[in-house]
Image (cartoon, rainbow, N blue to C red; front, side):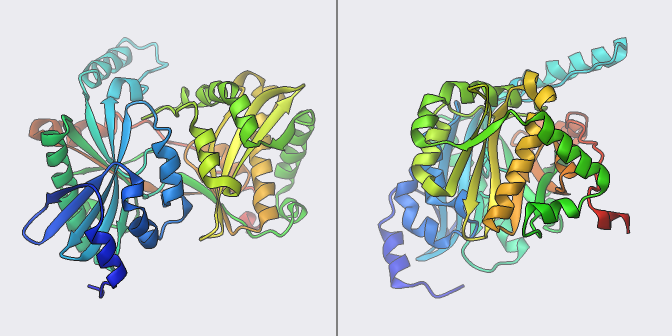
Length: 411
């Protein structure tokens, strides 16, 4: 364990929040205000702007309905061990999981009805280790170099202590726990055997290796250059502009409706953004957040948001929305992807993170995928046994066809 500075000791001794004794050596400090823990949080943050106090403050000011964040510090005596973001969600699985079939078969329809009947009974508080608004593991931050076995032991102790404390003292009914997002090779399922491991849509990203858009286009196979030109031609009447804070206030209703058109069409969704989310985000992140409007004949038909992570020289493509009725004729989403790519090249970032969903179209512009695992368990023994047996039949099918748009892919 590293030697702790007097500054850290002073911060630890003055932290606000509840204290939970984990065992004879460990304690967990819990608060629902990031300001209470901000000094040590940013000092120990190694995961960039999406795990920063600024971002978490914006979220705290605009929580999705039924979601609340807690910030936890695990420490031994005067030595910090880990910082965790835990979120408690009012969980109704029937509302989050879109189970349906296009089959006309009686048996297929019966099976869907049985599954919907089962999941309609799952209503309680879900404990999420991480941030449900983001793709990636932003909820687990260790202060020291520890083995994976140590990390997961400390994490499990913290999660169980937190859940027990919240159920006893805060009138929650935390009955299940979701850990997100682990990368391959972390062996989380080996060291946390009570949890069941599953995969949803992969995370998509593009490594930016081009200095200009022309260089990118030169690297494309001919059919993808044709696709690019066709998309630009169809979208020639679309205009892209940076939005100011005043414009975010002015257009917040229209932006929310465009966002909802997209969020309502995903197979699994744990939340809906608060209508003021983008306003609060801009207030906190300032120039590190770009939100672009897409206008057609003076009307907002789409928007997208980009967060600049200075520490890692990366762009994170955040939430967007677009008019799905107009999308085909104007190829709005395809043009948004090309615009994001142009932004990334212009800013000379090394990587653009494109989150989950729409894998095939993202791969057509050069994105590649990375598998991230989620772990879930029920705190009720019989339910956890059933979860392990049947979860694969509930996970949406993520089969998709990766594209290979670049010339070197032919070699």
